Each structure stands twice: as structure tokens, then as C-alpha cells.
Length: 166
Image 1 (spheres, rainbow, N blue to C red):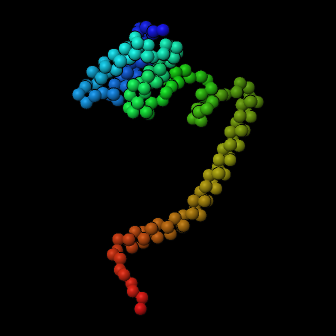
Image 2 (image 1 turned 60 degrees about the vertical axis):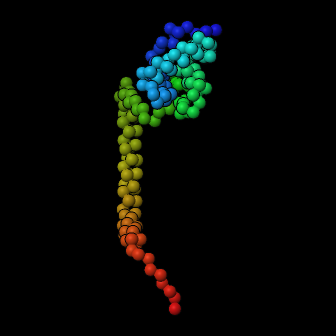
Image 3 (image 1 turned 180 degrees about the vertical axis):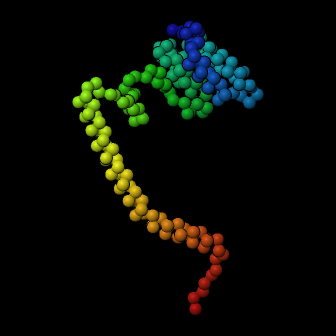
């Protein structure tokens, strides 16, 4: 089953061709010529059925990457074989940088949230004091280490002498 050319004229395929062209460009070609050449090769592969119709309809970029890896095996090793095209709500739970503050609707829930936040702040203050105490405890050792490092660097610059035992 052959794939018709118009369904491949999508923005993601155009972006893929823009990314592919500089990688497979011959030294005598310009980027525009390389892009046109890559587009012709994709069109030819579609006409000859080298790009699988079932795979390409669902995820054209993944099908193009698989085809391009076969066509130019050593030039596209860093490309992923499939792309995530649809993000789901589950992704938000996996991110540790996403923060959502929800304000409770009643006074009792607000007070409970405030108490929890204050308890968390107290815990953080205790951890901060402990970290500062640890820094002060290690400061003399760091000063000794810096002095030793300076002495060793100076000794490394001096010429070596051979000492003979009598």
C-alpha cells in the first residue's frame, strides 16, 4: 500500500527534513540543495513503498527516522527511533519541578495547610542551622587543606635534587 504524498506535508516532517539535510549534505551542496535532495529521496521511498504505510500514518517522524537510519547508517546514530508526540497528564506527576499551589475552600482546611507549611518551615530552619554548624566545623580543615595545597604546589615548582645517603 502506497502512502499519498499530501499526507506527508506536515510541519513535523518539514522539521525532520530541515534537521536531516545538514547531516547528509555532500560537501559541494548547499543546505537548500541538500534539503531538496532529502525531500526527493523521501518522495521516492514513498512511491516505491520503502516507507511502511502503517507505521508512517501513525507517527511519520518515527518512520522517517527508521528509514533514514537504514539509508545513512553512520550519520544519524544520535536520533531517537521514536518521538513522543502526545503528552498525557501523567507526565506532570513525573516532573519534580512542577509545583501547583491549591488553596483550600474552607477555613479549617486553610488552617491545616498553614500549620503544615509552618511545620515544614521549622524543619527547614533546623536543617539550615545544622548545615551552618557543619560548615563552621569543617572550615578549619578546609583552611589547613588549602595551606597544604599551596605548599605542595610551591614544592612542585621547585627543582628536584637528588639526596644521597652517606
